[in-house]
Length: 227
Image (cartoon, rainbow, N blue to C red; front, top):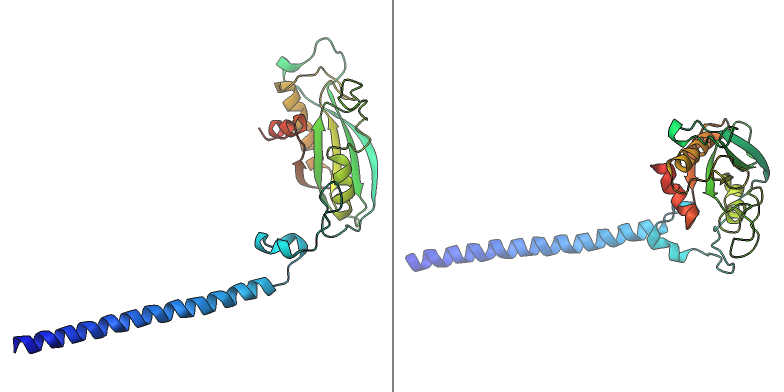
C-alpha cells in the first residue's frame, strides 16, 4: 500500500511539474511572438524627423557631404539681422570698475527668424571674448559679433534659424563692444553673462528658452550662465 501510494504521489508531482514547465514554455513563446510584433509595429511607426528613436536613426537618409553636420530637413523661415543691443548690467559693488566711469554693458548681436506674428521663438546663443579680438587670435583677425562666427554662429544661422530659432552672439565684458573690465572666469563676467541670457529670455519675441553652445572658452561660459 505504501509503495502504491508513493507511486501515485510521484505521478501527481510529475504531472504538476510537466504542466508548469509547459505553461512556462508557452509564455516564452507568446512573449517572443508579441515582442517581435511590438518591435515590428514600433519600426513601422511614422515619426517626425526630430522624434526618430536612436535605434531607428541609421535608416534615415542623412547628408554627410558637408564639413559640419546638417539637419535632415531644411527650414523654411527667412531671417533678419543682425540687430545690436547693449544690455546694462547691475554689478555688485565688489565687481564695479572704478576706473571706467560708464555703465557695464554687454553687447548682443541678434538674428531672428521671420515667423508668423505673435510666434515666440527659442534662442541659441554663443558667448565668448574673441569677437573683434585682433591678431592675437591664432587664425588671424577675428570678426565682430555682428558677423556669424565660424565656430557656432554660421552653423546655427544656416541650420537652426530657418527652423524658427533665434541666434545671439554675445561679447563678454572687456571684449568686442562690451564695456567694463575683462574678468576671466570671475564673478563680474558671470553676472554679465547671466544678465544677457536673462534678457534674451525676457523679450516679447522669445519663448523663454535660451540655450548656449560653444567649445573651449565659449563652452565654459555655458557653465557660468547656469551657476
